[in-house]
Image (tube, rainbow, N blue to C red; front, top):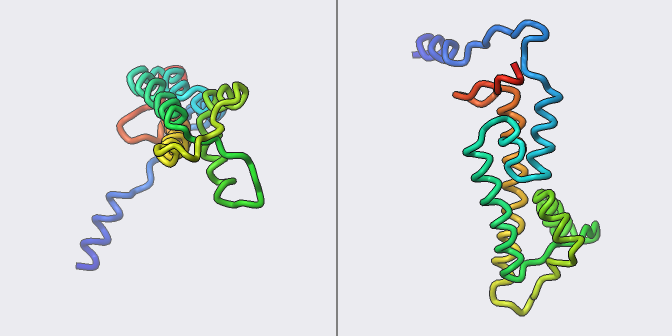
Length: 156
């Protein structure tokens, strides 16, 4: 059992040949896709010509953020004296441009007496964390790391 399973595992995870210098995906393009994906939810995927995914993210993530605000959710302040509040603030910041617009407009004060206050907080925090994951996915797509997806033609 030991030899057979070891050999089969080796064939499953065999390292691929290293790409020739200059022929691999551009790391700067991947960083730009991730940054654009953070600022505009789904923007990195749209830029990488992944239109369907990009449009879904462009609609779903800001909609979650707006629903969170409508439920009376709070945009947490950056308060280093309260570690959980600080983590929630970083999660909120993950929303990118919608967060910045809401912060400048004075939205997200939060209504603690609202029955839906905690739901609103949850929607805002989850939309920020989800947008961070989407931006990282755009980075991986640009580098061609995603199984079943090659880097866009412009990156090759």
